[in-house]
Image 1 (tube, rainbow, N blue to C red):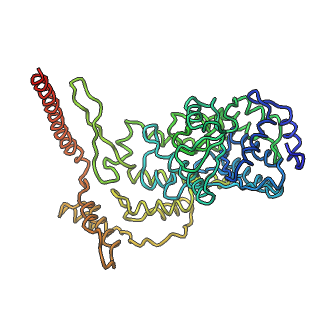
Image 2: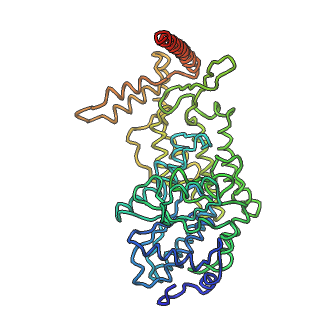
Image 3: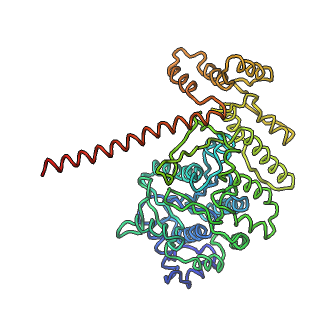
Length: 516
């Protein structure tokens, strides 16, 4: 290491000088990190998730840069952490406090390091999708959350830096020992003769994984043996792991990066796992204030059970259509029909939101500085409810719901589509009896007229009218008629398949006969 610079903290520096990890001196790895930093002008993006592996990476990079001369520290290093807005609160506190102190110490030490916390777009947060649009709680079969909430915000940040600098190098705490799939990804995309790998999806982005060969014990040996290079210890991180018996959610940068699950630190609302043992462990070690969050998460998990779907979810999709798909083939060779349910019924979305707000209110009253759902999300959910494709919230009920829980109102934007009062609703109900037209159809037509009011050219009007009128507006009894229609269509498909098979066999026989 350069003698022209200082060691950030003697404790970490002393460890570097003597310790070995993965049968290699740490001093040698520090030198490698410095060489990779110095070999070109590509800026670095360091992934930090708050867990043990990414903490080691951040410490190694910080220390390596601290021991370069000021003339050598020429290119920026962006430390990026992804907050989905539903992360386990204790982990969020750890991440934000770490980013704050690293930013402060980097300025004092004149290091080209800056820390950034990225979030999903308001339209793509967990609560806007689940409570606003009615998406069901994520499952292994329908894990809609990872890409929207984790991959996209990080990818957007990386692509922004690619646009600014041409190319970037992303530094990750990926370790081959973590999983066989991760080891394969690391090996598959490694550039021959280089320490870098190609990013699987982002152009002009490269991956550097300095601790790919480290073991679990190597990681903890470093974290618990010496203080952080910017000061302090990793005792708080160790207590979190010890309390929860959990792993960490890696910074997810593409669909090949394993997401959370199996009791890892991550989103407190995660329903992909059967039981959140990380949250359970934290509660058992004294963090009992997390119990309402665990109870709410378990309620969402219950709604994903097959026998509960009919109760919680609309029989129509958000497209307004009743959907059936071919299921398993029975012993007679016939395909079963599987009904695909739609979003949560509006009444359950309202119940869920009210419960969530009550939990937030009670935690704040108890002195916890916690926001479970943000104001921008509430505004977006309100808009989604008003314009819901199946169950428009005629009464614009969210502002009143919020005031019921908190006793005060927010600065709500005026509803430019107007809301219906009780007289309007009663009138629509009477018109439905007389003309057999569902009230929702009328509301959607009024919304369309309002949206296009004042436009000189109503381009696309016919298409939008057709889309509204072609939806399955009937009641639940429509399920049977739609199922029968699909079954009849499937019958024709089966007959056609049999005829095509028979035709192929006959054609083959004729061909063989003519050849003979």
